[in-house]
Image (cartoon, rainbow, N blue to C red; front, side, top):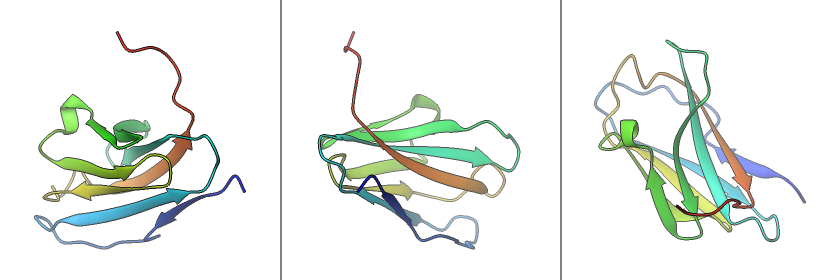
Length: 104
């Protein structure tokens, strides 16, 4: 099935707490799980981090605040290391994909 599962669905967390979000899929040949954030301050969907196979990458502006672990082929976890009140409030989305493009 082409389903991607994310949990928990809703979280209410105090500032400075740490949070873990889970994303999983069973889509054959898909090797990447990506995490996006839509903050309450900005309607854009911003890429936070992704797991390509077992290789994690956190986008530069999120380093030190977020971490990603797991395997893009089946399950990955987004860790919010220390919740900042305003900029980390919002919606989080995960997606699974087939990695494309070449490394430069």
